[in-house]
Image (cartoon, rainbow, N blue to C red; front, side, top):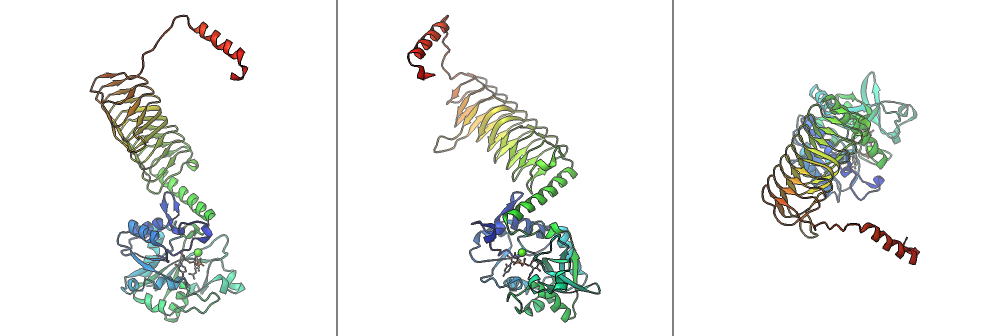
Length: 445
Ligand code: UD1
Ligand code: CA
């Protein structure tokens, strides 16, 4: 895997391959595809100052070996930075670019199969709508004889529509012999990996093309291309979700993450965003304009419209979370409800409990964060404020507008608000006082 991409055209302080689509880095997408294609060992070639890239690679593939290409002298030079890994002569060796995040495992498997079938080199070919910038695949009598980089190609070669996707496979037994013969005699004075084809031919070895669709090799060099890859991946993810039985009412408005997981008969209304780490169980309904990340939604739960599930929101079965409700790091047990305008953070809401409109958990005092525990079947009245750490027992009742600072025992009623005062017939007098004050000073309008 070559991950030494310079990020300058991204206009970003972040390494290019650390940019994300569908909630994961470009690097992670490619490493996942490589793993899914059954590759046993992974070597990642990085550039100088790419420590975050190395860390990400090892997070995704814990045994990944990291190699440093100190100087950028071409794709073959980069591959040879991993010489000791190549020298182990695996059955087959795939060279993939970390900036082509949409490559599918089945495409990599086809390349491996070609090597297994006797080819020394397998090249991933495609027919781009605009071939500008790609190496051209030169065929003679149906056989691949060379790859010509655009800058080195003559007019006839430039007219070739079949291009090099960049990803290549090698037979492990001959890979190093081929790579070591690659020179830098070309317009850019670089060691081109693509020269491997002509060299293999000269060694009487077979080189083949595996043709695929453009998405597989779609590269990311700019923020605009990042967005194009995101769009293409979203299409794939929506398609897969619908094939698995999810109802997406308006699929083009729903944004998924690569790891979003759905049960059966889930309904997702228009304009819902799934950040990373969300699982939704059978028959749940996600209403419009809901935003979720690192959360779990239980069976038959109803979420939204306009709900926000932040990391650690765990909703049990039959839970109802309504509009403008935010939940963070909290477990909402089976059948509990928070239907309107609420914040629940660092808390447990027991089974069947009701969390009223406008009620909130005050989990943060500006210094520390504390837990709140609300028992089974408890009732939290509207506009209550539960000041953490605090416990409300099973079946307890917190009156509307209460500020709860002490634990409430099970089945107790807690009132923590000032008493109402009523003054008969005083409304008229109050209005008269106010009117006189306004006449004296009209600026108080
Ligand atoms: C390469 C292919 C070209 C193909 C195109 C597909 C070569 C010589 N050319 O061209 O035929 O059509 O991909 O996208 O292989 N890299 C390093 N170190 C280096 C040079 C490159 O790590 O010294 C990495 C890059 O970061 C990138 C990958 O190798 O991940 C490809 O390099 P790039 O310069 O983008 O190659 P292209 O000119 O696009
Ligand atoms: Ca490129």
